[in-house]
Image 1: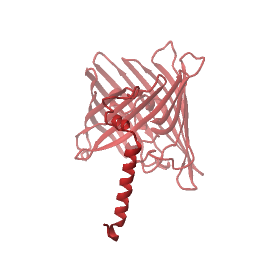
Image 2: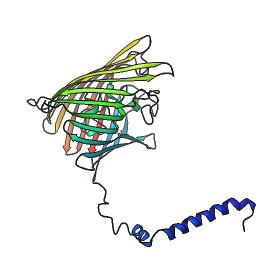
Image 3: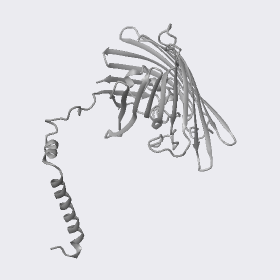
Image 4: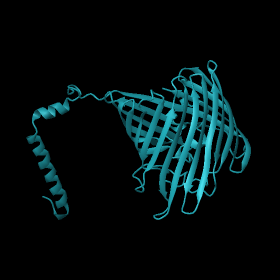
Length: 370
């Protein structure tokens, strides 16, 4: 018998026993036999879709002439890239990034991309989920797999949000892409609607959109690009992004990003130039900031020398990004690909930023795919 203090526990135990007994009586034995032998006798058509997994890793070393910055080895991102075709017209893409931080290499996991895509035809492809925004060229062409990038590191204006970036690199929403009809495959478009970036302190974890939108305003981005059929590898394009960001419940900032680019990319040659203007409009002021890069590389067999000029000009009074500071760098390097899916990069950098001018540095990076 149960005393008064144990009465609630006894009642729950009796109710649980009745439910289990009812379940055993109500369900036929064939159901339980099917569950118990599910792996031995799978249902017709119950096998899941085929999934392809690729992993991208990197190990790097960096040194600077600044005495307070010791030379050090570090792990780059481990990017897990997953794709699956559910049907001929529906596919799924996911990208999970693992990063090691601290002396004990504590692993931080980020879901960088997850999107379901419906492809009607060449003219209309719609995706929903978390994706790399179609601002300019670089962000949609290069993701977290550093193997595909020629220099070490992204251009400063395209740095990721949690690494001090100034752009909404990732977005959560809907994106539509395709070829403009009656243009062959020369003219392409992109249109996006998303939550927009949540602007907390830039270096703070969670500075990007990781959950529900903080306000009713949605970001929009539209772009067009031209790829002439007679000049393979050449592309020019432009995009325009707009969002309304609330500093307080009654104070908003109109955020606009205009981008223009021209690139020529073949397996042996790479010429890229891109310029962006970031505009922040408050009730009484307008702030203009500029960023961009020029990059060139040429392959001779397994050797590929490269150069990048990188520039980011920030007005310190600009809301949200004013404290990041301006940056300028000349980067000269060499990439060697000794075997397929393995690359070794080494580069010299001369940078100006945060009151430090003419700082020399060296970086090396080993990248691989498996």
